[in-house]
Image 1 (cartoon, one colour):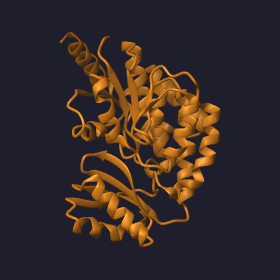
Image 2: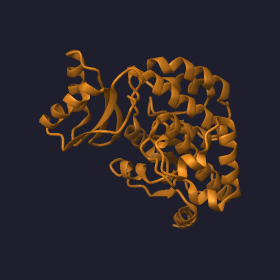
Image 3: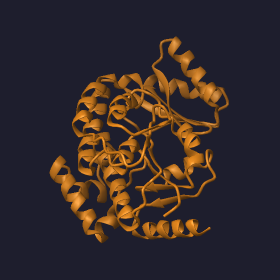
Image 4: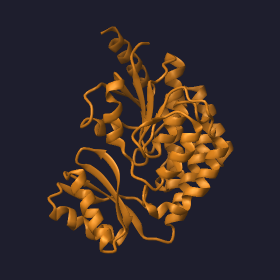
Length: 315
């Protein structure tokens, strides 16, 4: 197929009870991946993903569940189409799903890896009251200046997720974030809202997780990229294990340059295909691209995406 596709993958916040269920019920390959993931990690993914439970909101379980659902969606898609992406890209955790799609990580190795990543993040934040909040309607420079001023006065606050124009997520100490809500509103933010997060992602509060994650990455990463992965840290593509070993540990403590990544690659692709539950990235991408965006999150959307791509190719 001649259409140039970017395969994209969401991170935490995209999870929901029932994700991946349609694939599980209608695909033997999906059932086998659930079984393999359970055998490797000891996690009952059917119970985790298909029934109401408290674990799905805990980062050490959220991360492998999201990655498993996204990677199954991707596998079923490529098995039917044999499309090789021009680039792959993920938002935060989603970068690990992007590595699976690019051939640099085995699916089950990746499930185990992000389970560890989630545990390391939880442990780093275990003795701290931390959190995250979203700011809507302010420019990057305004938010960055406010964060810099807050840190200069002793606060633990960092701009960490550049999601789309006017939407930035901020991480730090919970008490500092609670006070920062009013700072943002006084700066004319359309909205400033604390998120239901027990970790403070992509900031120095996760320093203790960097070394053990780097060690595990050395064990499981392969130098077998079929397509470049766009780094959250640099907003630029990489395609070697050596680069991944440098960038992925940094990703824990540095901002996610998601909107910058989309703007950087938009001229190289004809469309975006989002794999996994929901369509979080479709919403974020609207401010950065007008290219078509397709979702693959169940059997019906899988067929719809394939048909849409055929139609796009014929134009």
